[in-house]
Image (cartoon, rainbow, N blue to C red):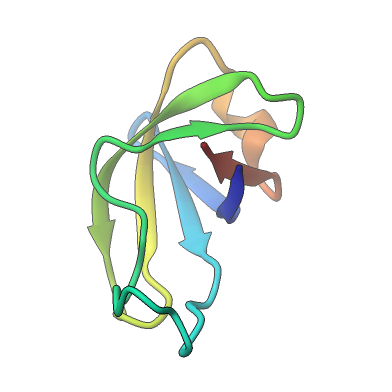
Length: 83
């Protein structure tokens, strides 16, 4: 499991995450590892939703995440993870 980023706000039924900074020494050369379709989890390992959009600066993008059965405002300031 790896940390994806923190929820900075909610908008139009989506949680908006600010991705963690990428590692410049990443061996596979990917700028950012999270892609559309990635399932995200909260700190209790419950599935929160999946990434539906990646946007913003390449080194630290924003990710738009749809929610499953989660009350979105409760996610603000939460850290989310991916398997």
